[in-house]
Image (cartoon, rainbow, N blue to C red; front, side, top):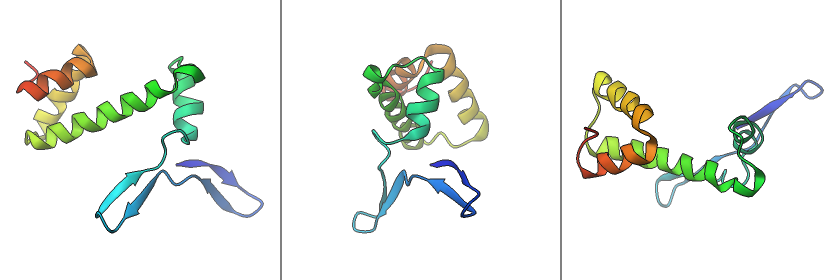
Length: 106
């Protein structure tokens, strides 16, 4: 996660959000509770208070579940992906996730 640029040392300031776990052969999200962009930019823009900060991570988790479910349902075609995302914006992420788990968004 890029935070900024430090011209004094000509370097990018960043926080590693994902790390590689070679034993399990997966990327691990390390940003929960430590994401500058999510907590100080996106949450503020969406009106989420510090007390309710977990909401931003819950939504991020739901989005990841939704993408995983799209892969499991073999939704790969560009137009199918596009239509699935558009429908999700229309009905809401939680509803779309439930419907997709049952079979389809319709």
